[in-house]
Length: 333
Image 1 (cartoon, rainbow, N blue to C red):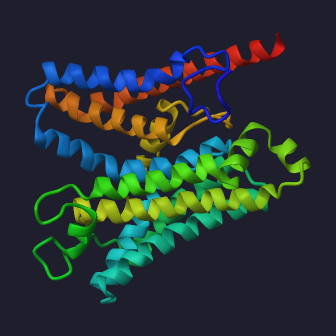
Image 2 (cartoon, helix red, strand yellow):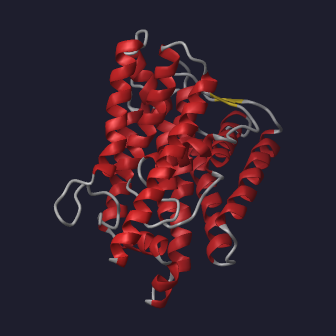
């Protein structure tokens, strides 16, 4: 049996759990394959592209990891990210807020959406799929309403308020500072998930919510906190997206949640809850971004990246089903 969090790579008997090594093994094999057969894949520019594409997906996936481990789902992460970034752009361009204030607003709006998700799911006992599907469409529309369906441009690095790109995207020397932010949030989230009461209760709720409630734990409060963390991560992702791509288009973001969910599942988390790790999630993020750039390097179009991402997700789910059945047989024995 693997450890409850799914983060270890050794079974209780001391044997290596090869299933935990599958995702990093796939990542290494993919990188080696595309380096050999892809045109200019093994280069500094490609590495930068992989890192930059990983920023916003990484933050979305970190928040989604908490939700999925708790046996929930959040379909609103992509539209929440884009709506918050869009409204932050309105605050800067139309309402003439400072850049710092606008960036804070991005995080606040996204976090509030997470709180709403948590309250509706935990207090009103509504299904997470339905609630977050609803807030996905609401955030999609709300961003367009506030922006009057106008595309928002964040300042470039050469403009007066462009300092935020040097803080969240690349420094003046070209260093990809975004990866430092991703690493910092990953470390904080990893500590929360593995070393704190929040993490223990997240796994407990995902494993058996009713037993957790009977044990005296206020499940509703912790579930609200879990979805709040997801919303906060959406806000950070919105800042990173704006810093990386500058332009925020209304009524976009729908579909980005699939990449976040895919990264979590590819990283070894179970959609049934109770199993998952942030280390696996980050590996899943890089599998997706390496696949995207690698397929482009061998002259395959974006639709192939979507196709193969879906194939990898299906394989990951099949592996999770096999792992769950195997664990059930061991318990019966």
